[in-house]
Image 1 (cartoon, rainbow over the protein chains, first blue to last red):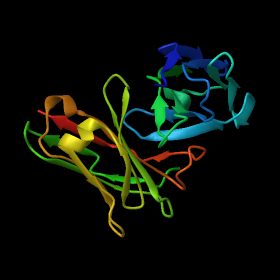
Image 2 (image 1 turned 30 degrees about the horizontal axis):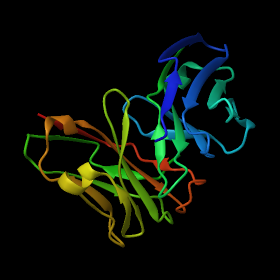
Image 3 (image 1 turned 90 degrees about the vertical axis):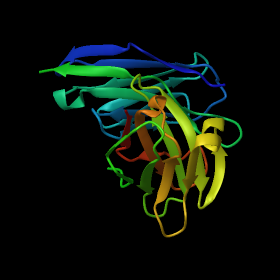
Length: 112
Length: 115
């Protein structure tokens, strides 16, 4: 079964400095990867969806996918304090009735 | 911003009590998922529907939970007899079609506390 792991568990950056988050997965046959953000006690907000190797940019958020290395990353350009949240990597299962498998998240804190 | 509406935002139940949560998916989204998120940010898939039909559910959901998505009414997830380990954030999500290429849009969740 697909396993998704995120690193680091927590990350603190200064406002304006690039923030980079990592996600590894165990099943390279999956072809749908998403990054979500969750502010405290709130629902999940989708940031970027990526379906093929390479890069996908959505505003200040850029995802990089390398399925051969079982790795997808998220880079946040010019982070602001309002970007402080838990960032979740989600991978679709590739067989049967699909569902999303989530990592346990990276807590990002952006200091002013 | 997601238009998935979940109620109530919080509910507190004693052990053994029923706990019921509701979800109105985004308009035009026939696919609905329920997830449980515990305090360690671990997500557990519970059940999903396409229109009123159950697509997939885990064993726990079959035995202690009941869920439905009737036409023209909110979807619901009910725990028949709450246990301490059920304390979690219950997230509902909807999707425009059943394919995995589609994004799930989440509500803000119902936080259950079992005392």
